[in-house]
Length: 149
Image (cartoon, rainbow, N blue to C red; front, side, top):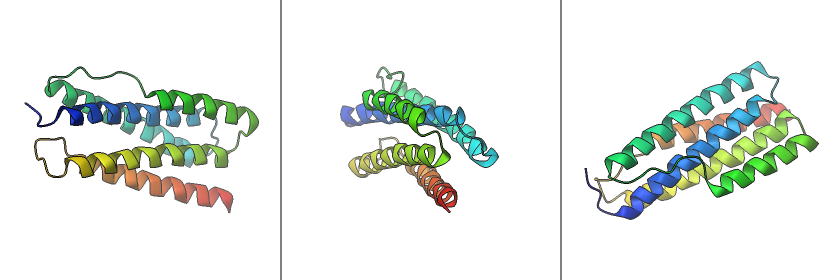
């Protein structure tokens, strides 16, 4: 399979890395949450993001490129910042705030990718993935609103 624009393969690689970042944030949250509902949500989303990252890396290989393993540099920085925050504030509200930020960043990247590739049917369609990420963002905001009440 060929791709019209190699830039999109690079963006798929970055999307896979961002999914890995998201999975890592959910796994870190699992270490600190007490709520059964939030823990179940985090576990499920970590698995979903790892699966999506794997699917994207397979697609990158299909396009004849080498997939990048691991997360992004900014994701590594967010991990350090999140770990530092957890030393100071080990509450669900802080955890939910971090998860919302990570998912919103992933959602925004998906939007940029979808806009950039909309006119080219040869590129990987992320509409279903985007819908799931958007749903996760909404659920996290609901959980955060519930934790604040």
